[in-house]
Length: 229
Length: 295
Image (cartoon, rainbow over all chains, first blue to last red; front, top):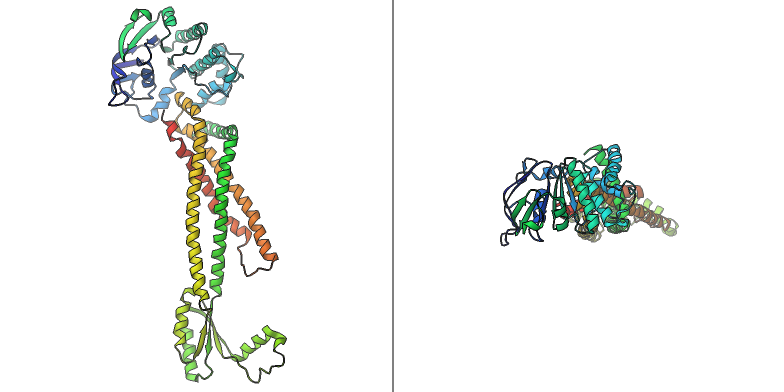
């Protein structure tokens, strides 16, 4: 699913590497935490995976395709197969829950009937079946992140990338969001979560890749956040 | 583009215009003001052209034949005028005919004068030419012939007319270019503001896998709609303004101001303003988007 070999990234020739000598593989159906402190390179890794930026050296393959060789016009189609979840939700706040999720389907050219059928089902799945017409700005942080999740899965991607999905949420709500991600994972979608939320990582007992100063400092199956230090 | 995407783009464009309705109105306002000024100037310039052309058409040379010219000299002059290709129409006016005309024009003012007995008017030639610029030269040449008493062509007036119309056309051209550049700048700037306000939306679209054209279309259509209305409104305003101007000229008997007919002038104007407005709108939006698509 994902394969990084000697992956390195720096934003400018005069600046130090943000990622260096990064090697790892993620198989289909895995649930992986990427942990590390701010500035460890988590966000850079996620940006590389959705090809917002290109590696400086090394290879990064996703769905078997080398991202450095991927032409610009293929990028939208890569992203349709990846669901993104953000710390700040990145929703259109003036619009309804339904519109925010439908938006992601319209972009792919889905037909109206398909959108009308699928969007309520997905919102139901994340527990917002009764909030279809609620405007995002009237909803709580936890509810907004559920919309974010619904938007990420509505196109049935094979990979979910979540960048600090619980960063703006209280512990209980965080756990609900992570449980939703686990449920999505159980249905076969590969999930990658970048976080520094120690409690969640420790409770989930999933694979943990630990980044430190841009390098992999640990990679454990059923790992915990604490042990990596 | 799929039919689905096409409908989506139109819907989004209209929604976008409505959501940012104040900014949309401002953009239309900018286009309206610039195109209105441009249109006014074009109308003036079209009419100056029209008047100049009709005045040019009326430029006429009158050659007065010397009373003491011999028959041979008269013959020579007649032959010369007849074969000159720059002269379209050469008409001989006998002194008797000239007197008839004078009587008709002045009517009873001539009562008491016995002009038939001693006609003071000379024979003459009235000459029309399609090359008004050549008139001074032709006149000078004719003055050298013995059979010619004098040549009249509104000396000075013709030269001045050409200088003035030439200058006006140049000033007009520069003004129009200046206004067009201002319009492009203002429209691009206003649309950039719309795009900027929706930067978040565009970024999100990129993350969920929208192609650049999928994102661009609604904005291009928005630009098209803005440009279209920005051109239609000044055209409508100019229709009324110009119509009123023509009515005023007619009702005040200023018929020497030979203005273009309203419909014709408007069609001519629409030919420029509509494509210009729409083109400016589309270009403005397309150029304003670049930065946001790089995600």
